[in-house]
Length: 71
Ligand SMILES: [Zn+2]
Image (tube, rainbow, N blue to C red; front, side):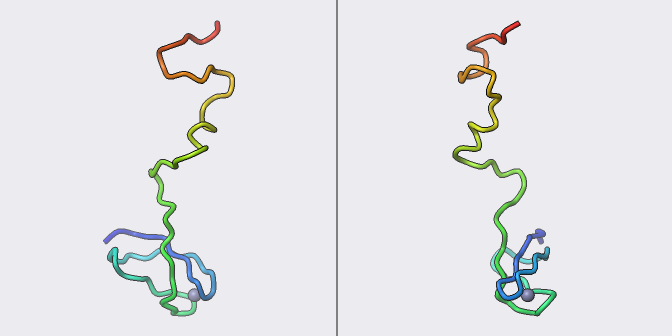
């Protein structure tokens, strides 16, 4: 079973739990089942403005291979 990060809606505690994908984890703090699985898993590329923000600002905005670095 995969390890997921959860956040408890009742006490806002963040925790990790091994659950099947269709199950909700139980909060270890208040034993609530009102938990929410966090979607910010590592390795998933973010869409939108972050792709442009990651580009170095001192390089021309073109793809690799179509222009040379200033030397
Ligand atoms: Zn809780």
